[in-house]
Image: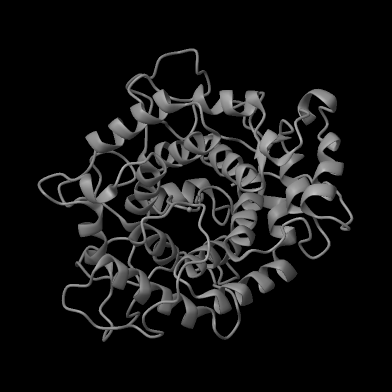
Length: 404
């Protein structure tokens, strides 16, 4: 599942799971890819359009908003006839052809978003059918159809299946479900990085601990998607050895690894090959959600507190997906995203595209998009309904997996 790296780099190493283009600087739209009406963010959507839109819609739903119709229409318009989604289609009016490269991550993210917005059962069903059709024999999924399975892709698809009301345990090829695939990437407790998950084995078959994959793997092993809440406390605090670990044990061991990794500084650091070692805001936000889902609320709250002090500039630079990740992290531990070290994550995200409106179930029905297209029409709603007493301000920024 972020904005922590450049889309090109992510695509190159295949770590586009729960952190798509939300870590790169917010580049200007290229001549080939113009930002389209309804899409959140102003940066080039070539590598993360569907991803950042999906995370944005999910974040808005967790806040009680009904996303603007044209924002949802933008996402549904990206779907190919066979049910799949590519990272971005510059001309949705043209049918998907051999040059269109659908991927499991974009498709699974879109499924979670459309399932959350409601009323798109047909689109969700077609997308799920496509995901099932490209499942690998080991039970997992790779980023592109036919590519080797990896932890991130398998986990984001598990989240999509769950969101669509399908039990991942019943989705299998050659008798193996995604829950059978995840333990194969879990590093044994007595090895370096024990408890963590690898993205996938290296060329020599060795498993190397990957914090991004570990956070994604916790949610996948627990059968959860991007939106998660605090779970029950884990059975053990440390990695517990098991010859054939269950998916719950995989999640608990991975959670123990993340908690240890965050213990000293409260944040994770970038480990991209050749990249300068620096704080990894996107991975840290994903780790907050994973730890909370695994019932490790204390380290999750510590990491969120670090993000609150340090992640503001990163979100401004990175855009919609970054704001969405932070909102989902706040949601997971019950924090108020309306006051993020003096900034409203809610206002900042909503200002980057069509203004949403509060769901009628909350008691507010006016459409902020119609009453004030600049997005200021939702300020009083945010202040009264979500962050009472907190100063409201809009911060413009870009977006995103989970990821490039």
